[in-house]
Figure 1: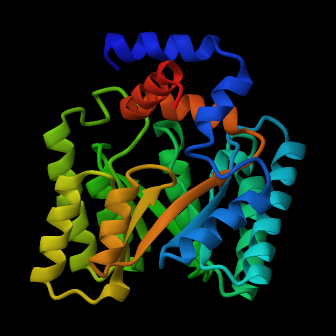
Figure 2: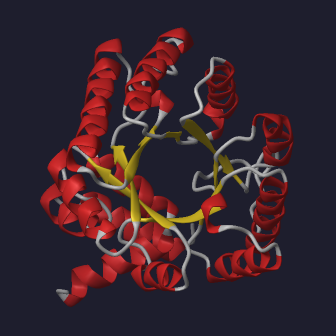
Length: 300
C-alpha cells in the first residue's frame, strides 16, 4: 500500500464507527439476514445471482463457531423460503479451523447436509496463506465423502496455485478463481500486476480445458475482456462458467457483463462483524479507500 493510502486508512481508523458505517454499507448489505435477502432479491430482478456471506472469521471458541453455523443454517433456510437465486459462502476459520480441524469438518459437513436437502451450493472461501493447505485438505475430504454441492477458491497470486489446481482437477472442482486479496510475503506470492494477470489467465484456461466449472471473480477490465475472448474462441456454453463480483463495486461493469449475455453472481456480505470486514477491505483495496476519503470531504 502506498503512503497516501496508508495515511487515509489511518484517518479512517480514527473515525467513530457510525461514520465508518455510513461508507462501509456501500459494500455490505446490512447487519441482518433480511438485508441480504433484500439485496439479493434486487440483484435477481436484474438477472444477477447472489452468494451470501455471514461476516466473521478467526473465531477463538467453539461457542462462536456453533453460533456461526446457526447463522449459516438460517441463510440456507431463508434462500429456500424466499425462492431467491443465491448460494452460501463460508470461511473455515469461522467454523473452527484454527481450533480443531475435526470440529471444523463436522460443522461444514452438517451445513452441506442441510444445503443438499435444498439442492443448494456452498462455497468455501480462501483465507490467508496460513489456512490454504488445511482448506484444500478439508475440501478434498468433503468431495471424497461424496459431497458435490461444495466449491473452493483458488488465488492466482499464490505461487502454489498451479500445483493445487493440478492436484484438484481429477475431481472436477467448482472453483472461484480470483487474483487474491491478502497481502502475502513475496516468497509465496506474486506481486506484479501484469504477472498476476498472466497467471490468472493461465489458471483460468487450465480449469476450463479440464471441464471444471469456473467462477471468474474479477473487477479487472483486461481480465474480463480476455475471458470473453477465450469463451468465444472455445465456443463455451454459458452453463459452464460465471463471472463474479463484489457487492457495491463497479456496477457499470457488472451490468455490462449481464447485458453481454453472461451469467454473473455478486458476493453479498452481511452481519454484525461489518467493521472488521470493512477495515480489511479498505486496507486491501486502494480504490475503496480513495472513494471513502473523497466521500468524507465532499459530503456525497
